[in-house]
Image 1 (cartoon, rainbow, N blue to C red):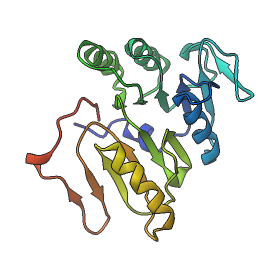
Image 2: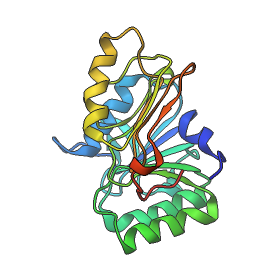
Image 3: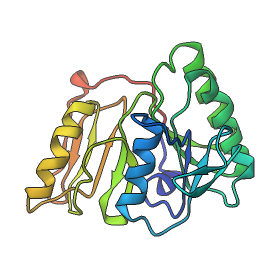
Length: 209
C-alpha cells in the first residue's frame, strides 16, 4: 500500500458527481445538495446522460465531456455501469473516486478494481456513505449533516457510526478533520494519540487505498 494519489482523495481541488439527479428522494439529488451546500470553492461537475442541467447547473452526458479533469469523482450510478465509469475516469486523468453505489460485488467489484489499477486510481467503496472533508468544505456523501472542521479524522467501516458521529461534531469542541465510510478498518486518528483497530478485529473489505 502506498500514499500515491491519496492527495486527490483527501485534498481535492475539483469534484465531479457521476449520477447527478433532480429526482426527489434520490441519492444523486442528495449528494448534489450536499456538495453545493458545503460551499466547496473548486469546480464541481455533474454527469448524467439523461440531463443537460441539474439544479440549474450544466450536466454532461459522460465523463469525457467534462470541461475539467476532476481530482475526485463520486459515483452514484447503477452497479453495472461502475467498471466502465472507473475506466473512463482513469482515462480522463482522475485519480480518486468514491463509489457510493451498492451491489458492486463479485465479478463486478473485480472488474472495477481492474479498471482502476492501470491508472493508479484510488477507490473508497463501493456501497459507502461517502467522504467529508469539513476543512475544505467537501461533502461527497449522502449524510444528513456535515461535520465541522477539527483535528480528528475518522475512518469507519460502519456508515451508521459515521452518520451518528457527524451531528455530535457540530456540538463538540473537537470537530472532525475528515470523515469517511469505507469497507475497511475502523480507526480514529488523533495527532497526539493514534488509535487503531487491532489486526485480529479488522474487516477485510474490498476497497483500494
